[in-house]
Image (cartoon, rainbow, N blue to C red; front, side, top):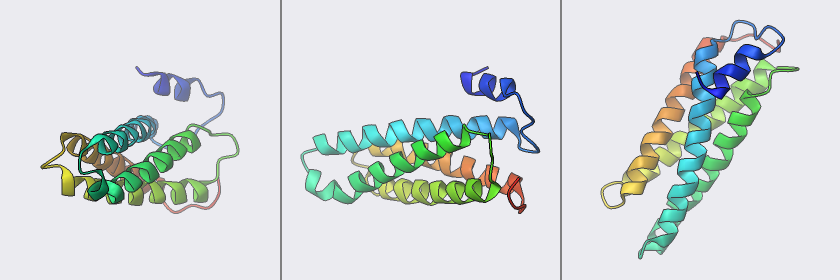
Length: 140
């Protein structure tokens, strides 16, 4: 059991119909992806061909910020608004796809980009899975 799961289980109110395991997996994937993207951007800055990695670095940093924000928002449950949750999940999935695609372009030459692309794909998939399980309701 992770601290994320423990915190979800100890939340004093009902979390509604959200799949707690999917939520916990997504929160973990968001924070892991944020860290991995930050580390990949830093590794790109250390490469000899750094000028050719400008877009990758920018995409890494944008994805990192969006993933960290998504993880934080999904960790809060008081005053929950399903519309905000859906919007942030979609934004996170889009950022992860863009970053994963960009890192894939460099993965053959830079192992850190391969690792980052994998983390982005995992987070993107977790976002899409939770989005699919939320349905179409209004604010809860």
